[in-house]
Image 1: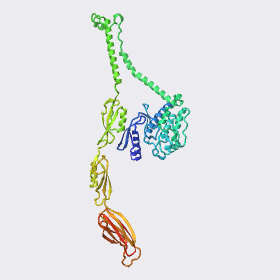
Image 2 (image 1 turned 90 degrees about the vertical axis):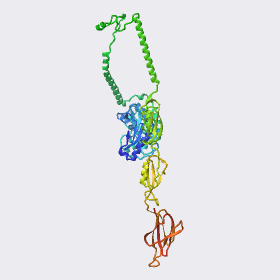
Image 3 (image 1 turned 135 degrees about the horizontal axis):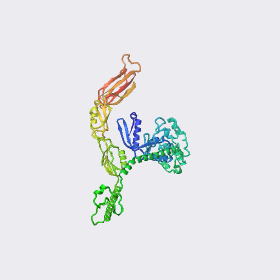
Image 4 (image 1 turned 30 degrees about the horizontal axis):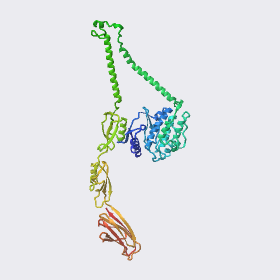
Length: 586
């Protein structure tokens, strides 16, 4: 089980990277790629469940020294085949290194940790702490922050093969930035002369700086590795002395184990020797070996210790022959029964046990069924207790013995059934939210202007009432906000008349205005400035007027309600500058 660290769960970038790895692993199944069985979310963050590879990583194996040439090429070929499977689905691993190559005790080679994998041609990243990859195995294009493709993994696989042959990667020392620059600028050291020319040429091609000059993808590199003929180079070299020593130690360990086994078997041999007695052999001519005195005294005259007394008139030799025939017939019958049992066992279909599949996602069901040689047929139905895509039922049940290739019917959850959206328009927002929650729905609110509607009342809902919506989906509610003044238009003038028309939605509206005289008034005590007149455009009637006073801003409020209106300004006798703003209240 792989889980994200709690402090990373708060970082959306790490969570996205973790979930991307799970999705990429679950996208397909390949024997060379670690298989994922389940994806989920726990209290502290996401997790996924993958197969257990019993063995060690290639990094752990390399810690003990270089790998023999033939073994290194075999591991590299299977690594490239696994990468080819990912490349065929448009996935680039971007972090191929020995720590991510797993060597199973059964000889399997598997690639894991797709945490920085991305689709081919993905976005580039600048060379920084966030660059995807490991500096010692990073391709030049990764170090430059450019886009990646299958040739990126080919370069990293070449570095891994280089390390298997030599014991260290081509560039070992320096900081992350320095190692990245060395991959961009420097040529790797040449492989030792003991390495066959065909192998050296293959590694050099995989490590070329230009992606177009490398192998196109993992499949092409795997084919080149498979085509190499080692010939006399397959034998261990002088540099493989540590490997030979390890093999020698293994042989000595096997011999020691045999000695121990022999010692454990000695008591059994002694026990057989103590209880295994030879029956006395019958001498020729019908005479018998001397018996114990007590046994002889208990037998009647003429009784043989090895052959039962025969009825008068039946020759002893014929009885012995008849017993031999009976024994032969019994032996033949036993042999026939044995042959029949073997035939039934050979020709009978192989058996397997139906695995437990409930609770697994579709990919996990397929992987587990494939390992146990059963075929899966999927169906779906709604479930109130399982998220969509999780297996909730299976037939036959877990533990049933069936023939290989048998069909198991698995039901996947569609998630909870859809619900009908209730009518909440006209209700207070809090009450509307409670009604939606009882129906298994969520809601969001947006405050809107609603002239004539009490604040806090739902004025609109989407989706509308009566339609079916997925369980847990969100209903958007529009809620009337508290009324306030809103500016509709502003206009001004000097010594002239103007008029402006506008629409009022609220119950009242107002005109805020200001005016200042340009010169002295005609009369010293009285000034004749401009005046304004309000009219209803629907009726064509004027219904209110006012004079524009001098000084600071003033306001004139109208309670005429919604409608179309016009305000007209007429110039006065004295020169004056004026400005006017019309505002609606809703």
